[in-house]
Amino acid sequence: MNKLLPVWLLAVAVTIAGCMSMSESSSGPTQKPGTVGDVCGGKWELSLLRINGQAIAIDQPSEFTFLCNSGGEAMGKSGINTYRGSMHVTDNGQILWDTGSFASTKMAGPPQLMDQESQYLGALSRTRQAFVKSSGGRLILRDPSGDVYIEYVKADY
Image (cartoon, helix red, strand yellow):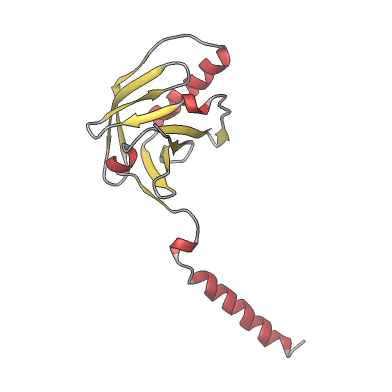
């Protein structure tokens, strides 16, 4: 056993050193703060909505979209209705919403979809940070604490 201990310790040290020297490109998808060009570079479709750490089931995620332009106009679909408002994305991914400009159409729908829409719009208005990951294929909007987390995938037009 005493003869194997140095060999075992050497193997552990080599393994740890190998893990520490792994480059960022081999450690999986990277996430970076979103700029206006990243965030407003196309149409996004909802893939995940989390509120207070709980995933919210969305029946038709493709009916929940987000778009914006470099002039600060945000818009999209929220399940049944459409919404729009003004926003600003800083170079370090901070989102500043003009809450007074936020508006939505008022069509009614099935109660379950109306509830999902209400949760989505409430969560969206509380987001303050934007990140992109997977080489720009995913957009994350979240609040600073991570209690509100909305993830989108790039949509095909």
